[in-house]
Length: 528
Length: 68
Image 1 (cartoon, helix red, strand yellow):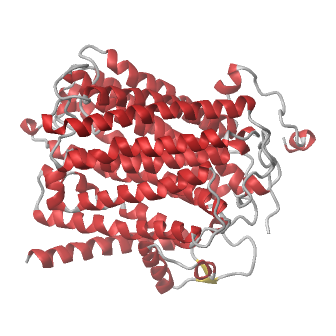
Image 2 (tube, each protein chain N blue to C red):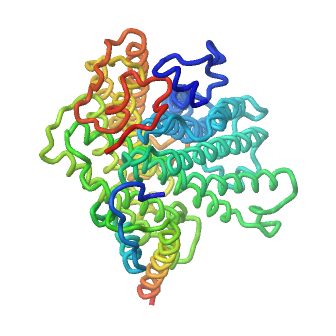
Image 3 (cartoon, rainbow over the protein chains, first blue to last red):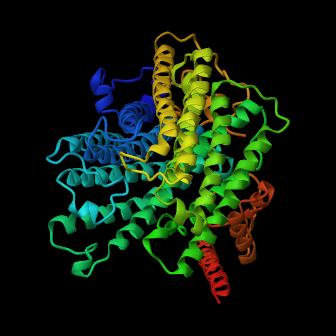
């Protein structure tokens, strides 16, 4: 094995792996699998995006125009599930696959075949979620949170949804085990944990979160399944169960899940901002510690999602205080990113624009989160559009913008070609403007009392809803521009220089050619 | 696993590990302070879980104080 590797040396298109479609089906190469994750997540992003546009089209005017309420409920449900489990999470696993072996000086992921299986579990799960729409009675309109007793009473689509969630969970857990093992065991000599790029650290911590909470979600949906079909009464009050129990279990998964999405996004931004500030990341060790701390605290605040479900005032106070305290490590991170830019030699290429967009808008989403953490305020705002606005600032302007930053940043390394900078900037500005047109007004809708997940609304909400819908279509179509930029880069982009970003200093830029070779490090790199 | 290269850092005392975990809760830590110490994962996990329990107990007692 070693000898064979040595002989083939730097051959880009190495030894006898399958070609054509089988290259992808049977791939054990971390780069190919990373690419598949990224394309899959973009496809899901478009599917979930179309669902969002159906929602926004119906909400353009009060009254029911386009869809039936049942279908509307199904759209809100699967938009959420597909975006969270099908688009954002796989996108960052794609980044992890591409980058972690290169950044720590490893040849590949620790378990390449399991890596293949992790990916190939996703398409069947996605098909189940889409097929659920065509079941008798249509998709399960239970919300992405799948609260009991709604979910224990929903039609057969719910069973497909439960199965899909199981499969997605297994995929995520296997991916995370792979990431943990790779980082802990396969670092090049000299690459101590505290020398790793922050992206690797954020994924190491995220992977532990995934392993800890995905089984909790799997347990929750299994309990729904047995309540539905096997005569158990976990969530049935008439049988001695408790529907609020489901909410506790779900959010014990659900709150860390927020950080499973946000923390890798922090990692990407922590690579991009120093590169375009031409300074090392300010407070690297603080960032590591803050990330670990956010991860730990994320397990202790779950019930702030359910202040209105009924709980003693002591519990309300506890969850309020604990939630407010999470702002401290998060604030440390925002401070560190700003301090990294401070007196840096800044340039504003597309990745940096998206990273700054992230910084600005994610902070805004964090602040509205703090507003919602205050129990008496949340009792007013719970299940209104204020909440919708809040988490879209975190998920879209946070995670998605960071993913865009990462894609523009590493596209030259991945493809060996440069993307069109002008079009990239257009993509950024269109996304930024339309994102805010869509979601900023939703704060006001929520403050004025417009409930979420309802296809109709009172007439006084009309103007802001129209603005939001126009913004949503603008945002959606701007993403087609992104697709065009990426395809144009791959097909006919100019050849990228070896190191297009002078401030980038992790191993994939300093120790590997551009584009990255088929096998990253056949022999470990020599590190200072 | 950690100290593959460089001079051997000194073993951390319980107090130093506690300080480390507490600074993690705040999110502030100097890199040099970290590199001076050799800490085993087991130490961090045990002290971390205890500190987390302590954190919960502290918040709960503050709540009790407020309720009264």
